[in-house]
View 1 (cartoon, rainbow, N blue to C red):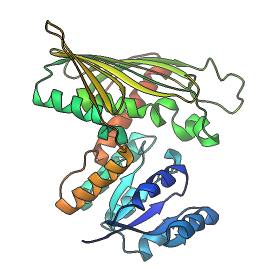
View 2: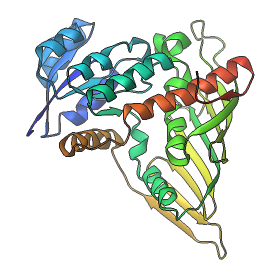
View 3: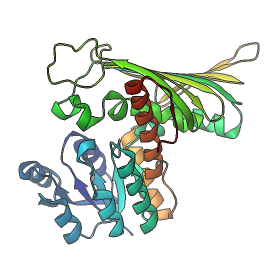
View 4: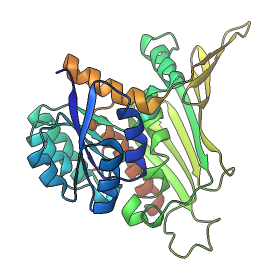
Length: 330
């Protein structure tokens, strides 16, 4: 397979992010774009080449695709994964993969049944800092994980669908999910969660139904503890995805996905910095291409997207009911 043919479903902002990378790769040829807005599909087609469709089903029927990129907002995810998988098309899907576990589990079953490869858009997993922390924990050099604390702070209100909890899932499910996924990726599966949320800052926005502050504590199955706080009322023009993990041999501190500061817990204290500028969006695409060529699993297959969705949905359920929520969800 010298060149892989790609189709795009959904021609919005995140599709633009991916097309900037896809258009630079010699292994890829984007041959078609689908969007319910004919104007948007044609704009992409004119800029990057390929055919424009207003019906993604017709695109999958008419085009011979190796990969489909599903770049839809979460409320619009329906049966794209199932149809693509049945046709033998490998799948890239943006996070969150769904807004409920029934749909997420159907997606996972379809991918597994038809043997296609999948990648979920948790690009932070490809950051240098997160990658090094994962290596240290998996290799045993870090020792047991005891505590993981993270915060996702920004000053942001998206468009109409993002502000509507029924369509986006809220900040935790749609946005801070990157941090929830990162701590899951590093520290393992979660056993129970308990949290609170509120809307205290954007009170003058009439169409806003999502939380703007949240706090979630949880216990990993290993027995380690964790906590994540989020807000949409952070420093203007700043996006903070930060975390600290206490392991037996290190305190790990990350101020962004590409940076990791390591403090040894033994004396004399030694401090080491790992940092590298990386394009994590490009790396997640390259990982998918390599997985298809080598017939191996991607770093973030769709089952991982389902597990992180379950984590965030459990957090939201606890915040709504005021009670701890045990995983897995029914």
